[in-house]
Length: 199
Image 1 (tube, rainbow, N blue to C red):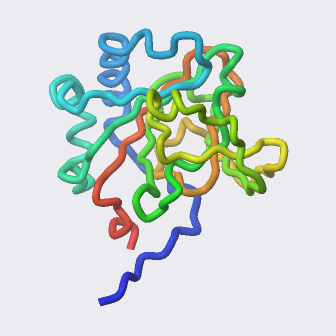
Image 2 (cartoon, rainbow, N blue to C red; image 1 turned 90 degrees about the horizontal axis):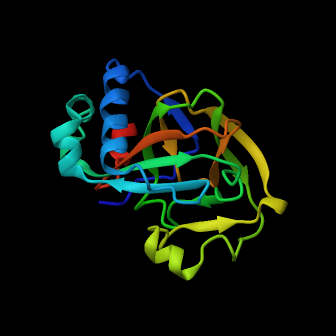
């Protein structure tokens, strides 16, 4: 048997989340209760939300993952946010992994202040060697990510973050937010990677 997986050409697929209002409330409660100081002085950051906390305190989110038939493959949820004046500088153009077969998709659900926010994809030319320092690679979970030089990158598409969507994270992208207030979404990852879900 041969490997028939091919890298997806699409950048995003918007989805309907019937219980989105309840998911937003539960996940924001989790954020404010357990992760209120995660930003520090950074304009862009992310933190892994403890799965046991989400199971106990975000039942609508858990039920939605089950409704997709992907609950057993759920391996992590990431609270991703931007805020303040450093929000663009601290949000590098990047791919989540250099191995698209291992990490290709993210299920993104907006939580708060996503009305003026976008995920933006780029055609890139050069790596940005300063995008991830050694300390950040360990502390922030960027070990397999790769940053790209914005000076030589060209925007190819964008999606309003207010739309829940599957995101192709194997194509260089970044968060963009016109609002300096906290913008937060929850991004869900699965293993094995969900290539089969889209075939």
